[in-house]
Length: 173
Image (cartoon, rainbow, N blue to C red; front, side):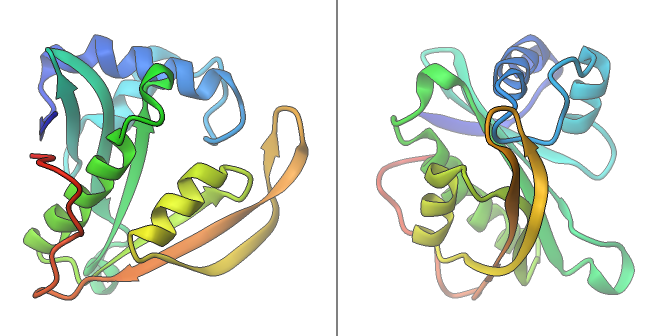
């Protein structure tokens, strides 16, 4: 698996993954009928560094890295991740997470904060904890889950020690 910067040629693959992920209404705040242009604007644009995981020429997942806040809060990064449903359980999310931690450190961020991790997305919560993130806040009933109703969302946080590379399970670059 290779992880590289997104290109304009990846737009169809990003849209396909985005559409599949938000259609379920169980992990992301976007409405299932989010227009393609709005979805792509989320991943492409000024100040957004988007990376894709590619294997055998197919995009399996993506993440974007941005400053969580402007100005005096810009030393903390924020990231969003999506993995193609048929690529779940194949290490794509972990590879993207490890890459993101290293890339955030390389770009000078001193921490990463995920502002809205749906509590019932147990695979994501488990992965982020394995990668050193902690739940530092709970937003009660903040997410309208398609089948469970209102569920909590977590704020997750990890400091980035410049000397500590993300744990590697294989070549994710």
